[in-house]
Length: 481
Ligand code: AMP
Image (tube, rainbow, N blue to C red; front, side, top):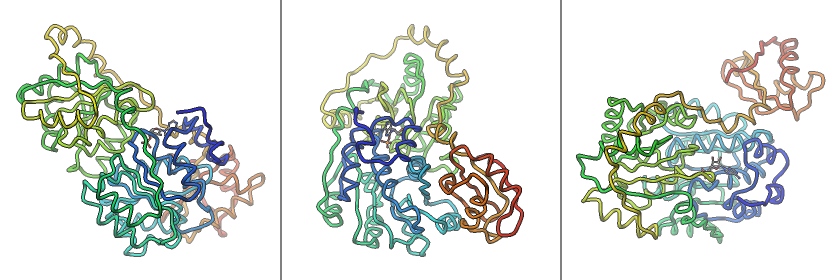
């Protein structure tokens, strides 16, 4: 972070206010470099890792430039995983909350019709996974005519997951006159080809990954035979007095096995892998983000993009077979100026993977001795007490922002033919309220939500309960969500 301010980058007041409420005082390095170029409408290729603040580096210029009155999407963002899709959508909604920017997330294994209904309302930014986004485009529920910004997030992961053809199909359908930004931790030949084909004189920005990976993260490894791995894991959790950790395994079967064994031996934990139901995956990530539990056993689905504060330890129970995965996994710790530790278990077959990782990192990972039985014994009590104590919940980043927003629920929606204009009209009739006080309006079938800003929530609530919308009385109450 630097002493630069967001104002100096030309960001308008209502976005700066939201950023400050989110705790973003100064732009991060990637933001300092990307925001001015994005505001000049240049195509950009950014080599940066998660944790660098890259979501806001495209989120801020998008929110800055969207025309709020326009109903069709003006920006389309593709992400490789559903979890990241939801996270990016939330980040953009937070940044643009006071400007009333509406972002919608579209991803698979969720009812298409719910997303189509959301997209029918005024939508400024769509964040989607490639397959579902393509589906919406083909069925006409996402209209691309007005898209001025197209962003590919985690492009290398798109490639790994085999999505690059779908990304290309989407690109072919976009208006030619647009800005394209591509973010990737690594830029492979295939990504380079895609950029040359679909981007106009892109500016290349590189945020040095070494600084992120060595300054704040201590890297160690343990030589351990396959049969002793689980015992070592238990010992390490204790001797490191782990606060919060992601334990990475290479397959979902290993995740199931390790998490079951941990639980059976009194180490409360949760698990995350691609074989779980979508709703359950989102629930686990959200609970981990808030700090409801300390240990998450996961496959690489958790390695990319997911932003969890204060993960103190990354444990590679199974060494990643691709050197890039190591960097993505450890990117979950040592974030936002905090220190972190990356611990990797290596058996005799894993040596070549370790060498590849070390070569890629440009330094060797120090080999640790197994913790002694005495040390484990002496530290066990303190660790188990911590593990079983009620964790201090982490603050929800948007809580400050939400304090300023009063969400109202009304018992009328699409079925009563209510439109946003009807709600705005009714609210503007209330004395002392102007259009600046009305935030995002979300109309569902049987009900609607309205964000009220500037401390006018109670006034609007009373006003709505004593007036009517489209000639009908409605019941308004403060929303619970
Ligand atoms: P990302 O690289 O987009 O996953 O962001 C990493 C973390 O940094 C997220 O928790 C962001 O909310 C946070 N963040 C992004 N920009 C800033 C900033 N300028 N100041 C402080 N935190 C930030």
